Image (cartoon, rainbow, N blue to C red; front, side, top):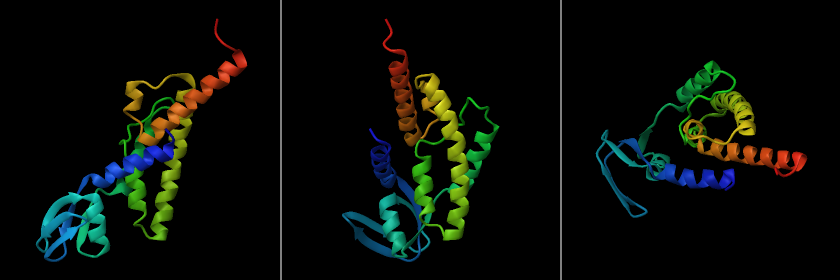
Length: 171
């Protein structure tokens, strides 16, 4: 499966997860077959896709984890790891971060994008070295995002094909 396909599938799953919202005013409505009812200042967990619609219409405030803080923590954790080991990332880390970044002002977006590029560059280098030398283990799999898992397997397969082409079939 290609990275784009994996991201699409997991993004749908992410959109179905519940998120905490705070109602800005009393509200009772049907959002594509989902009944939503809440009082002003009431907190409630609702599916993320519904929350995004209600937020765009100024009915709710979505309360999510601060992904900038998560990104900074991920970068620090990655920096302290040695060159041949990866820090653990949430399976949907990049999906969450990209959704978060879409809501940022351009100056904040640029700062977050710069930090993200640093993290990706570090992890990409480590993944290439690891994928070139070994199959994906369950321990390593638990440390990768869904995108990185596909990337790892693609690099590993390409490395095997390259070696096979150069060295020939094993006898």
